[in-house]
Each structure stands twice: as structure tokens, then as C-alpha cells.
Image (cartoon, rainbow, N blue to C red):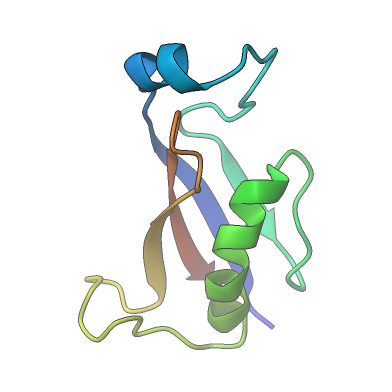
Length: 100
């Protein structure tokens, strides 16, 4: 299996939605811009949020097995994907790419 690199590319925060709908939370997200994770054997890397991992795992699994070409010609590098976690208040965007 190939190793897969996950890089935090963007982090958003929608304070208006947080104020209106979310209950106060301590330390809601531990990601930092530019942080990287190396995935081996499709195991969740230390420090990766469980919710984000659930979103990324199907793509990580395909890339680790040599796949790619998600949704046709979506990405310039066919062995990568740009994905976001499912946190509607503070979504994090990740670049997921197969590495040798």
C-alpha cells in the first residue's frame, strides 16, 4: 500500500452560526494550518479528528491502493483529493495525496 499525506490547507470559522446555534465548546478543533499527517496502512494518524477521518477515509483507502481519478478530471493530480471535514461551524479543508 502507498502512504498517503494529508495536509491542512484552509480553516474557516463561521462565528455568526456558532453564536446562533452552537453550545459553547472548549477546544472544538485541534487542527492548525499547514499541519501534515502521514497515513500508513489506512490507520488514522495520531491527532486526526475522528469526524474528519470518517470523511477522508474512503479517499485515503483508494489512494493507498493506487486508485484516484475521483469524479473524472476533478483534480490536476489524479492521485489526490481536496476535501473538507463535516463541521459546519469551522470546516477544515485537507489536501489528501498518495506519496511513494
